[in-house]
Image (cartoon, rainbow, N blue to C red; front, side):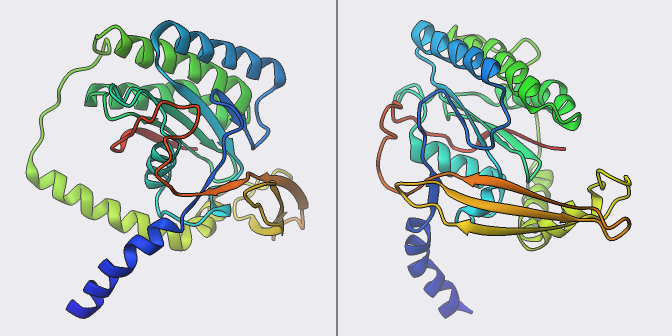
Length: 281
Protein backbone atom coordinates (compact mmCIF):
# COMPACT_ATOMS: atom_id res chain seq x y z
CA UNK A 1 0.00 0.00 0.00
CA UNK A 2 2.85 2.39 0.86
CA UNK A 3 4.44 1.71 -2.52
CA UNK A 4 1.18 2.43 -4.32
CA UNK A 5 0.76 5.68 -2.41
CA UNK A 6 4.35 6.70 -3.20
CA UNK A 7 3.76 5.91 -6.88
CA UNK A 8 0.61 8.06 -6.80
CA UNK A 9 2.58 10.98 -5.37
CA UNK A 10 5.17 10.63 -8.12
CA UNK A 11 2.64 10.43 -10.95
CA UNK A 12 0.18 13.04 -9.68
CA UNK A 13 2.07 16.08 -11.09
CA UNK A 14 1.98 14.48 -14.55
CA UNK A 15 -1.75 13.86 -14.28
CA UNK A 16 -2.35 17.41 -13.11
CA UNK A 17 -0.30 18.86 -15.93
CA UNK A 18 -2.40 17.01 -18.48
CA UNK A 19 -5.65 18.71 -17.53
CA UNK A 20 -7.26 20.77 -20.26
CA UNK A 21 -9.46 23.82 -19.92
CA UNK A 22 -11.75 25.95 -22.08
CA UNK A 23 -10.19 28.97 -23.76
CA UNK A 24 -11.82 32.36 -23.25
CA UNK A 25 -12.59 34.49 -26.29
CA UNK A 26 -13.11 37.63 -24.17
CA UNK A 27 -12.84 38.47 -20.49
CA UNK A 28 -16.54 39.12 -19.86
CA UNK A 29 -18.87 36.51 -21.39
CA UNK A 30 -18.14 33.21 -23.14
CA UNK A 31 -21.44 31.54 -23.97
CA UNK A 32 -20.24 28.22 -25.42
CA UNK A 33 -23.52 26.49 -24.46
CA UNK A 34 -25.42 29.09 -26.52
CA UNK A 35 -28.03 29.67 -23.81
CA UNK A 36 -27.85 33.47 -23.45
CA UNK A 37 -29.95 35.62 -25.76
CA UNK A 38 -27.99 38.18 -27.78
CA UNK A 39 -29.53 41.23 -26.10
CA UNK A 40 -29.01 39.78 -22.64
CA UNK A 41 -25.40 38.93 -23.45
CA UNK A 42 -24.70 42.53 -24.47
CA UNK A 43 -26.27 43.85 -21.27
CA UNK A 44 -24.26 41.44 -19.14
CA UNK A 45 -21.04 42.42 -20.90
CA UNK A 46 -21.80 46.11 -20.34
CA UNK A 47 -22.35 45.52 -16.63
CA UNK A 48 -19.17 43.50 -16.23
CA UNK A 49 -17.16 46.04 -18.17
CA UNK A 50 -18.51 48.89 -16.01
CA UNK A 51 -17.69 46.89 -12.88
CA UNK A 52 -14.11 46.40 -14.01
CA UNK A 53 -13.64 50.03 -15.01
CA UNK A 54 -15.20 51.45 -11.83
CA UNK A 55 -13.85 49.05 -9.19
CA UNK A 56 -11.09 46.98 -10.80
CA UNK A 57 -12.99 43.77 -9.98
CA UNK A 58 -12.77 41.18 -12.77
CA UNK A 59 -15.91 39.05 -13.06
CA UNK A 60 -16.60 36.72 -15.98
CA UNK A 61 -19.42 34.45 -17.14
CA UNK A 62 -18.77 31.08 -18.78
CA UNK A 63 -21.39 28.63 -20.05
CA UNK A 64 -20.47 25.21 -21.37
CA UNK A 65 -22.67 22.34 -22.47
CA UNK A 66 -20.87 19.76 -20.34
CA UNK A 67 -17.56 19.60 -18.53
CA UNK A 68 -17.10 15.96 -19.48
CA UNK A 69 -15.64 17.05 -22.79
CA UNK A 70 -12.54 17.95 -20.83
CA UNK A 71 -10.21 15.78 -18.79
CA UNK A 72 -11.93 15.10 -15.49
CA UNK A 73 -10.97 16.93 -12.32
CA UNK A 74 -13.58 15.11 -10.26
CA UNK A 75 -16.07 17.52 -8.75
CA UNK A 76 -17.57 20.69 -10.18
CA UNK A 77 -15.87 22.60 -7.39
CA UNK A 78 -12.41 21.32 -8.35
CA UNK A 79 -13.10 22.07 -12.00
CA UNK A 80 -14.18 25.66 -11.26
CA UNK A 81 -11.19 26.33 -8.99
CA UNK A 82 -8.74 24.87 -11.50
CA UNK A 83 -10.24 26.87 -14.37
CA UNK A 84 -10.31 30.07 -12.29
CA UNK A 85 -6.63 29.72 -11.42
CA UNK A 86 -5.63 28.75 -14.96
CA UNK A 87 -7.30 31.84 -16.37
CA UNK A 88 -5.96 33.96 -13.51
CA UNK A 89 -9.19 35.85 -12.86
CA UNK A 90 -8.92 38.96 -10.70
CA UNK A 91 -6.22 41.26 -9.41
CA UNK A 92 -3.13 39.29 -8.34
CA UNK A 93 -2.77 41.26 -5.08
CA UNK A 94 -6.42 41.56 -4.05
CA UNK A 95 -7.56 38.18 -5.44
CA UNK A 96 -11.05 39.60 -5.92
CA UNK A 97 -12.02 37.89 -9.18
CA UNK A 98 -15.33 36.11 -9.76
CA UNK A 99 -16.22 33.25 -12.12
CA UNK A 100 -19.87 32.47 -12.86
CA UNK A 101 -19.88 29.00 -14.41
CA UNK A 102 -23.03 27.38 -15.84
CA UNK A 103 -22.92 23.81 -17.19
CA UNK A 104 -26.28 23.45 -18.92
CA UNK A 105 -26.41 19.74 -19.78
CA UNK A 106 -24.91 18.62 -16.46
CA UNK A 107 -27.49 20.83 -14.69
CA UNK A 108 -24.99 22.41 -12.35
CA UNK A 109 -23.47 25.82 -11.76
CA UNK A 110 -20.97 27.56 -9.52
CA UNK A 111 -20.01 31.04 -8.43
CA UNK A 112 -16.27 30.75 -7.76
CA UNK A 113 -14.74 33.54 -5.69
CA UNK A 114 -11.14 34.71 -5.44
CA UNK A 115 -9.24 33.98 -2.24
CA UNK A 116 -9.65 37.60 -1.12
CA UNK A 117 -13.32 37.06 -0.23
CA UNK A 118 -14.35 36.08 3.30
CA UNK A 119 -16.66 33.18 4.13
CA UNK A 120 -19.65 35.52 4.46
CA UNK A 121 -19.49 35.98 0.69
CA UNK A 122 -19.73 32.19 0.23
CA UNK A 123 -23.10 32.29 1.95
CA UNK A 124 -24.14 35.27 -0.13
CA UNK A 125 -23.20 33.40 -3.31
CA UNK A 126 -25.25 30.40 -2.19
CA UNK A 127 -28.28 32.60 -1.52
CA UNK A 128 -28.01 34.20 -4.97
CA UNK A 129 -27.75 30.80 -6.64
CA UNK A 130 -30.75 29.39 -4.79
CA UNK A 131 -32.99 32.44 -5.08
CA UNK A 132 -32.01 34.02 -8.40
CA UNK A 133 -30.25 31.60 -10.74
CA UNK A 134 -31.90 28.25 -10.08
CA UNK A 135 -35.61 29.19 -10.19
CA UNK A 136 -35.16 30.44 -13.77
CA UNK A 137 -32.99 27.47 -14.74
CA UNK A 138 -35.66 25.04 -13.52
CA UNK A 139 -38.10 26.79 -15.85
CA UNK A 140 -35.65 26.37 -18.73
CA UNK A 141 -34.89 30.11 -18.96
CA UNK A 142 -31.10 30.23 -18.75
CA UNK A 143 -30.82 33.67 -20.30
CA UNK A 144 -33.01 35.40 -17.70
CA UNK A 145 -31.42 33.47 -14.85
CA UNK A 146 -27.87 34.30 -15.89
CA UNK A 147 -28.63 37.97 -16.46
CA UNK A 148 -30.47 38.42 -13.15
CA UNK A 149 -27.96 36.27 -11.26
CA UNK A 150 -24.97 38.12 -12.66
CA UNK A 151 -26.53 41.43 -11.67
CA UNK A 152 -27.06 40.10 -8.12
CA UNK A 153 -23.44 38.88 -7.94
CA UNK A 154 -22.20 42.30 -9.07
CA UNK A 155 -24.35 44.26 -6.62
CA UNK A 156 -24.23 41.97 -3.58
CA UNK A 157 -20.72 40.55 -3.84
CA UNK A 158 -18.37 42.38 -6.21
CA UNK A 159 -19.28 45.97 -5.36
CA UNK A 160 -19.64 45.19 -1.65
CA UNK A 161 -16.15 43.67 -1.57
CA UNK A 162 -14.73 46.60 -3.55
CA UNK A 163 -16.19 49.00 -0.96
CA UNK A 164 -14.48 47.09 1.84
CA UNK A 165 -17.79 46.00 3.36
CA UNK A 166 -19.44 42.72 4.36
CA UNK A 167 -22.65 41.27 2.87
CA UNK A 168 -25.81 42.56 4.52
CA UNK A 169 -26.71 39.15 5.92
CA UNK A 170 -23.11 38.01 6.45
CA UNK A 171 -21.25 37.19 9.59
CA UNK A 172 -18.70 34.71 10.83
CA UNK A 173 -20.16 31.34 11.64
CA UNK A 174 -19.01 28.96 14.36
CA UNK A 175 -18.20 25.32 13.94
CA UNK A 176 -16.56 22.26 15.41
CA UNK A 177 -14.05 19.70 14.29
CA UNK A 178 -16.50 16.77 14.24
CA UNK A 179 -18.80 18.11 11.56
CA UNK A 180 -15.82 19.24 9.49
CA UNK A 181 -14.39 15.72 9.44
CA UNK A 182 -17.78 14.23 8.62
CA UNK A 183 -18.30 16.81 5.90
CA UNK A 184 -15.02 15.97 4.23
CA UNK A 185 -15.81 12.26 4.33
CA UNK A 186 -19.21 12.84 2.76
CA UNK A 187 -17.68 15.17 0.16
CA UNK A 188 -15.11 12.64 -1.01
CA UNK A 189 -17.73 9.88 -1.14
CA UNK A 190 -20.00 12.13 -3.17
CA UNK A 191 -17.24 13.09 -5.60
CA UNK A 192 -16.41 9.48 -6.40
CA UNK A 193 -20.07 8.51 -6.72
CA UNK A 194 -20.77 11.45 -9.05
CA UNK A 195 -17.74 10.72 -11.20
CA UNK A 196 -18.79 7.09 -11.60
CA UNK A 197 -22.55 7.32 -11.77
CA UNK A 198 -23.38 11.01 -12.32
CA UNK A 199 -24.82 10.60 -15.80
CA UNK A 200 -27.00 7.66 -14.86
CA UNK A 201 -28.29 9.42 -11.73
CA UNK A 202 -29.27 12.51 -13.74
CA UNK A 203 -31.03 10.35 -16.33
CA UNK A 204 -32.92 8.44 -13.69
CA UNK A 205 -34.53 11.59 -12.31
CA UNK A 206 -34.88 13.58 -15.53
CA UNK A 207 -38.36 13.74 -17.07
CA UNK A 208 -39.18 12.92 -20.67
CA UNK A 209 -40.30 16.11 -22.47
CA UNK A 210 -42.99 14.08 -24.26
CA UNK A 211 -44.70 11.82 -21.69
CA UNK A 212 -43.34 13.43 -18.52
CA UNK A 213 -42.14 10.16 -16.96
CA UNK A 214 -38.74 9.92 -15.31
CA UNK A 215 -35.93 7.71 -16.54
CA UNK A 216 -34.75 9.07 -19.88
CA UNK A 217 -31.61 7.63 -21.43
CA UNK A 218 -28.86 9.94 -22.62
CA UNK A 219 -25.87 9.11 -24.78
CA UNK A 220 -23.20 11.58 -25.85
CA UNK A 221 -20.98 11.24 -28.88
CA UNK A 222 -18.02 13.41 -29.83
CA UNK A 223 -18.22 14.09 -33.56
CA UNK A 224 -15.19 16.36 -33.81
CA UNK A 225 -12.69 16.71 -30.98
CA UNK A 226 -11.81 20.21 -29.83
CA UNK A 227 -8.20 21.31 -30.29
CA UNK A 228 -6.19 24.31 -29.17
CA UNK A 229 -7.07 26.12 -32.38
CA UNK A 230 -10.63 25.04 -33.13
CA UNK A 231 -13.84 24.09 -31.36
CA UNK A 232 -15.25 20.60 -31.54
CA UNK A 233 -18.72 19.20 -32.11
CA UNK A 234 -20.77 16.68 -30.18
CA UNK A 235 -24.25 15.23 -30.22
CA UNK A 236 -26.55 14.15 -27.41
CA UNK A 237 -29.07 11.39 -28.06
CA UNK A 238 -32.07 11.33 -25.72
CA UNK A 239 -34.52 8.42 -25.73
CA UNK A 240 -37.45 7.53 -23.48
CA UNK A 241 -38.10 3.83 -22.74
CA UNK A 242 -41.73 4.62 -21.87
CA UNK A 243 -42.99 6.41 -25.00
CA UNK A 244 -40.16 5.86 -27.52
CA UNK A 245 -39.42 9.61 -27.62
CA UNK A 246 -36.13 10.35 -29.40
CA UNK A 247 -34.22 13.57 -29.95
CA UNK A 248 -30.71 14.45 -31.05
CA UNK A 249 -29.12 17.76 -30.04
CA UNK A 250 -25.85 19.10 -31.42
CA UNK A 251 -23.53 21.09 -29.17
CA UNK A 252 -20.19 22.89 -29.38
CA UNK A 253 -17.13 21.74 -27.46
CA UNK A 254 -14.94 24.77 -26.57
CA UNK A 255 -11.33 25.00 -27.66
CA UNK A 256 -8.95 23.55 -25.10
CA UNK A 257 -5.66 24.64 -23.66
CA UNK A 258 -3.13 22.99 -21.41
CA UNK A 259 -2.49 23.93 -17.81
CA UNK A 260 0.41 26.29 -17.43
CA UNK A 261 1.74 29.08 -15.23
CA UNK A 262 0.10 31.66 -17.42
CA UNK A 263 -1.74 34.47 -15.65
CA UNK A 264 -4.63 34.13 -18.09
CA UNK A 265 -3.69 36.74 -20.68
CA UNK A 266 -6.10 39.63 -20.28
CA UNK A 267 -6.96 38.75 -16.70
CA UNK A 268 -4.91 40.05 -13.81
CA UNK A 269 -3.36 36.84 -12.47
CA UNK A 270 -5.70 36.34 -9.51
CA UNK A 271 -6.35 33.02 -7.79
CA UNK A 272 -9.00 31.15 -5.84
CA UNK A 273 -8.63 28.78 -2.92
CA UNK A 274 -12.02 27.17 -3.54
CA UNK A 275 -14.38 29.76 -2.08
CA UNK A 276 -17.85 30.34 -3.45
CA UNK A 277 -20.96 28.20 -3.81
CA UNK A 278 -22.55 25.64 -6.13
CA UNK A 279 -26.05 24.71 -7.17
CA UNK A 280 -27.83 21.99 -9.13
CA UNK A 281 -31.29 21.74 -10.61
